[in-house]
Amino acid sequence: MRISVTQHHIDIGVRGSCSSDPIALAMREAGLEKPHAGPSYLTWRKDFKDYSVETPADVIQFMETFDNSPESAKPFEFEVKE
Image 1 (cartoon, rainbow, N blue to C red):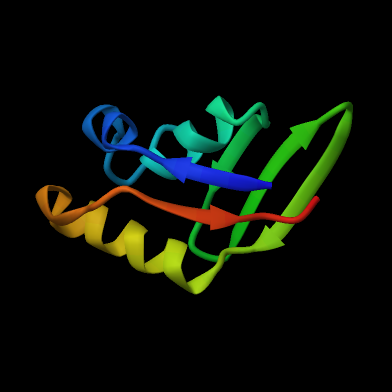
Image 2: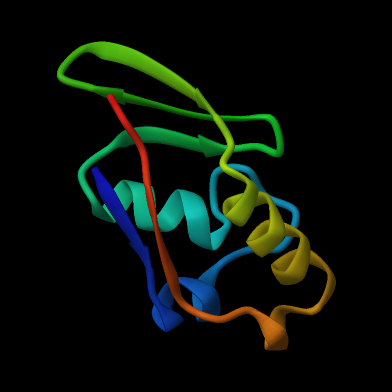
């Protein structure tokens, strides 16, 4: 599944939050329930199943940029496999 992090997600995202940062907001908008975007794992629920994948390197880089310099964060897309 392709996840698109938009400027809107960046604008309303909360720094340092695993459930309200732009990554989690984009995951929720893509239809994933209870998203959690941590530096080690991305987790979510869909169709009554729980999923967990290692956080991709580009997502980790985005998180670091957003948390340390949100004005430098840019929209991007990433892929998660269910």
